[in-house]
Image (cartoon, rainbow, N blue to C red; front, side, top):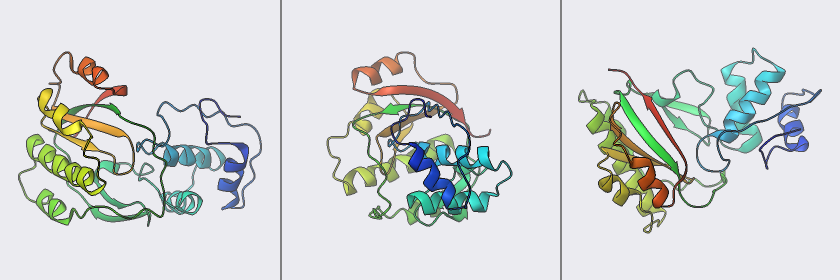
Length: 220
């Protein structure tokens, strides 16, 4: 049985386990705290949870391969530090280890309708130049935010999302920068560590955002 999920029926779970010739014995209660099909990696995270519930010591390599077989794409949530990986989701492959992130605080949520991952969608903007820039020494919160904003702006242009308000809102709330999902509705605003202005959440709600969360990551 499942709680809070429209996508994980008994047949979906059985098909996932069949890739490894495993049987779905017993009962699974799936409680998702993230909306599905919004670009947060919830589908991969749920598959990893199911696989680890059945075989707790399953290797990272097997988890990646099984998720890829089952869905045609995968997020690197099974790794210890996924934020440091340049990841090819349609290949399930680490392309490059990236530097440690500077310490930042973020607030984000969902804007627009869910968009379920299409594994055949490989039409993404080129960001090689931004990856090369991130290899340079000046890894400040401001520089990271600028790279994220540029990458996201390319996605907005490439996918013809000209009505997307993220860039305008980022200026309004005085964020360092912003990021968006390449194929989902999640949007995120980047601030210096512990410096998200009071009232930011209300501005996002008034702008049509839902499921708003704050979090911090990175190292000093």
